Amino acid sequence: MHVCNNYDFFAFTLIKYPNDALEASIRGIDMWWEVVFPSLLPFFITAELLLSFGVVKFLGVMFEPIMRPLFNVPGVGSFAWIMGMVSGYPTGAKISVRLREQNQISQIEAERLVAFTNSSSPLFIFGAISVGFFHDSRLGILLATAHYVGNAITGICMRFYGRKVDKPKRKEKRNVSLKRAFHEMHHTRMEDKRPFGEIMGDAVINSIKTLVMVGGFIILFSVLNKMLFLIGITPLIASAFQNIFQFLFIPIELALPFISGLFEITLGANMISKENMDPFLASVILVSFILGFNGFSIQAQVASIISKQNIRFYPYFLARILHGFIASILAILLYKPLYLDRKETDIVDMPVTIPVQNSEWTNILLLFEQYGPIITIATFGIGITILYHRMKTNIK
Image 1: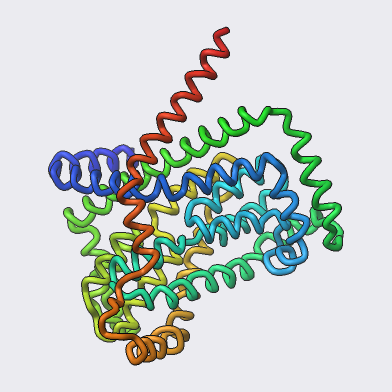
Image 2 (image 1 turned 90 degrees about the vertical axis):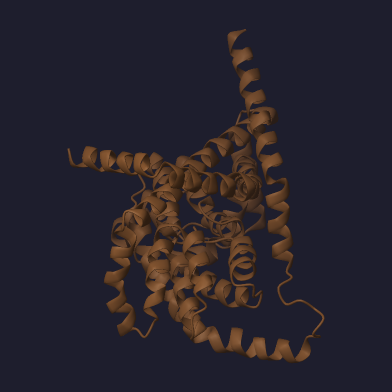
């Protein structure tokens, strides 16, 4: 009954504010089909192909001496970690689930892996936040360092999670062997009896399915965040945080943007950038926290993906809180050497005629916004064609 009342209340707010709901929905769709879908699709398809061809097994053998001592996960986890950093969330969760499906990692190992492989992409940190919102490309170095180093520290902390349960399953230590790595890769490929065409088709279809789910959550939380603001819930929570902010010497004006960022990173970071707070460090701390926290929108996407393999959500959620605090502390420690000192040096050395805002990441982001919808529509066309041919073959 309580759940039904929540749904009824949400439906009531949609009816009361239809124009705002439509505006928020369009904003979510634009973000998804212009940037999210075209930027994540190549990585999702590549991940599926590399898993099928045994390349991940190869990496697993080579990176076992690094991943096991640091994060207490098999070497194959290096693939999820690297891909998660390069392409952004929720790639790490998707790859972790695929590794679990293939029994390359245990449930506990999958939960450890999910906890630290879902990070923001460089495109988002440098292109969207640093240049797009704050109009300062130098800020990206600080945010990225705090984010990725904080993520690695979080993974090291999570290595102790479930170690008593997982201890009997540990394998004996083996040295790195290039020959064994190629053997494992070849063996994995031979076990997969699907022809190349079918493997490629499955990779495209599975990637599209996941990205459609991601798009649904982006739109849902875009609307939900707007509705919570309009009915006064977000400002109410923000007012409760003002006392905490005062205690931490953070401007209380940032409380509302911070709460919005806990729901959706993009909106929160944009609102924080518009406040132009002094000291600027306060804005950097909060942006670092919400990047590490991932936001409830990203967390919902991860929860939906990992539920297929009964991978528990709470280790990931606790790791997000931990990552948020670690990234914030790192932002404080690195603020002077990576931002203030670099800013003073760049201003002295840089000619006045060169605009500071220009960045390669901005150009990439603009390309996605320009050609992203074409890529999205074309991919859906390819997916429909593949499904049509499969249905036609099954009928015959």
